[in-house]
Every structure is written in structure tokens, then in C-alpha cells.
Length: 188
Image (tube, rainbow, N blue to C red):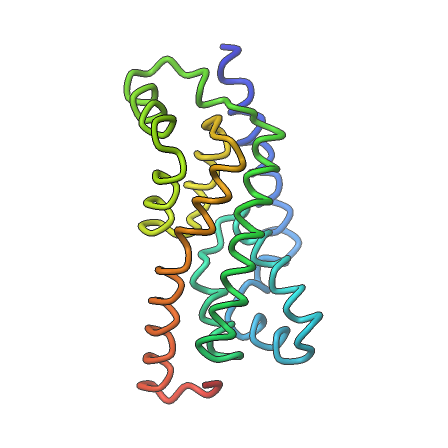
């Protein structure tokens, strides 16, 4: 039972955080229009708020593409992609550090054969594994949670994140720019 205490602590933390955002109405601000307005009103403070909201959004299961679309539509493909890359790296790092603080390496405590096998693969090639996972799943919160609780070193996690995010972000930037032009969405 002790092995599940840290996982329970993480679940309670995330549940309470989600409840606070949901019941306070703050979650309603995590939308494309609000994010665009914040970035456009004041580039510097708007970008800082963008990074903060991305970080909080990652903890409460807001998809990263919402932030990327807002940045691309407001700042254009290059600057929007760069802003999203920085925000995503900060967000993933903060999620990792927060959940590691609360949950430690809780997944290491599991005795499930599948979990042990997956963790051994992660241990064998940690940076390569994180790069591949980032290319496939970008900033998906569940991935961040699992990696934070896996016992992987932060250094490996961070390097893998830095190397794995540029390709999918660049592809999404092209996609959102194309989509905005095809649908005549203002902002590009």
C-alpha cells in the first residue's frame, strides 16, 4: 500500500488544482481568443503570461496546440513557434519538478512487469527515449506526469525535451499557418 501513497498524493494535487481552476472559472480563460488578446496587448508581459498559462494549462490537461495556435495566429509562424517552444520547455520543466517534488519516483515502486520493462528501456537510453516521446506526443500532460514519476534524471528529461520539441512544433506552425490562410482567419 505504501507504494501507492505518492501516486495518490499526485492524483489529489492534480485533482485539487483542476477543481480550483474549474470552479473559479479560470479554466474558461484557456482559449484561443483570450490567449491571442494577452499576447497582442503587450508583447512582453503578454508573452510572460503566455508562458505562465501554458505551464498551468499543462498541469490541468489543456492541450498544447491551443497555445501554439494562439501564438502562431498572433505572432506569425516563426515568432509564434519560438514563443511556444520556450513556453513548452518551461512548462514541461515546471510540471516535472512539481510532480517529482510531490510524487518522487513513484513509478519505480511499482512491481508490475510491464512497468519494470518500460522503465528499464527508459534507463538504457533516457535522452533518446524522451526525444522520441516528445516527437510523438509533444507536451501531452500524461507523458510529463509519467516521466516525472519515472525516476529519470531531470538533466536527461530536459535535454530530451529541448531536442524533441522543435520538429513537432515546426510542423504544427506550418499547419496552423496554412489553416489560418485557407480559412481566412485574421492574424497571419
